[in-house]
Image (cartoon, rainbow, N blue to C red; front, side, top):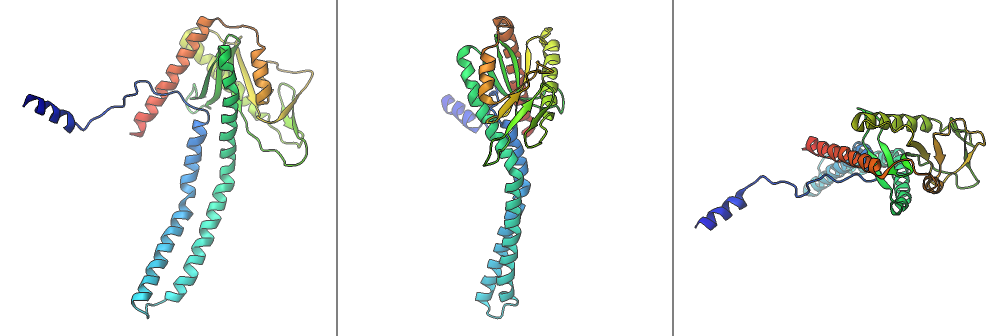
Length: 282
């Protein structure tokens, strides 16, 4: 009898909890996926409108079958589907056009993440999509931590023309494409993110990481022509393949103990952010 009472109490209990104690670390492109979702939901309005109008037309047609003199049946059966199709087609086409940069960005971040996996066999720890160290700041696309230092990586995926050879030119401060497009904003962005991380590590670990942090902007699939006289050697602008070679050639700048402390604190921050985000969604 007591056994049945205990079993009944357990089965009737409505509250549950997740078996996962630690929130998982983030994957490359998680923030971009959220942006794609936020962009796609409002853009689906034309599709829903098309479905509603199709339902309306079906109702008119059904009414016409039930009563041959149902008013405006032929008018509705011709004009409503045509108008609904045009409206939905234009909306979906606009959604695909404006959503292309998000798709390209997600593909670029995942391609860079695959490249960075090569560093794990060399003792490096790799993190992706780290939330900003400041409120409303920019996320860190990728972070590599190891004996060669701390590498803050910003991925910029850019489409290329089908014909012809295009490249970028970098002098340490400005970054331009040979078709005249200026990409220098990426340099300022990765510098700012690296400075935020340095300040955060100083507050968290009481350790100045200025000599070990390396900001990197990577353009997967592009050739970047570096000037012989680089004005600011602190920042790298490289494609994804060259970036791996440059990182692996770096001399040891950080002890294993410090690297482990940095990794632990970064992981704690990401997991805490994941838990807070999950709780706020409930």
